[in-house]
Length: 138
Image 1 (cartoon, rainbow, N blue to C red):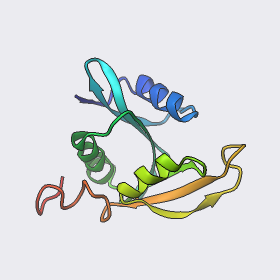
Image 2: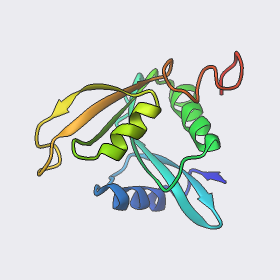
Image 3: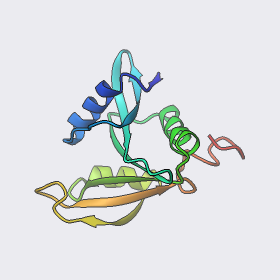
Image 4: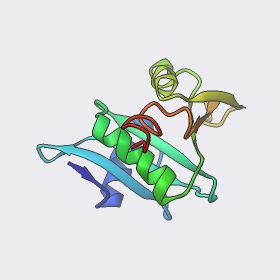
């Protein structure tokens, strides 16, 4: 089941997995399976054209990915989402590439002990988006 509440619990779960804490305002989506979060997204720093996305997951479902696309593009009205990850987190970099993300740059010492890599996911490049369910998209 895809849920957006309780957003504080979703944000705490995501933050605990990626080593950050989130402070309002933010929104969240999660996939809950048998009463347990298996994947979560936190959305913050919305600018009308862009939103920052943080993600943690045991596994990602097609249903959740389509829900994320619908939320970012149709509800928030964004053309892009921004994500950042630790430069030493190769699993996250691989996952971002599979989601159509393009590397835009880096932020020196962003995580204190490690640089951050900054990625953009454009709505046109997201594999679960515009053409995922025929001409109308997801």
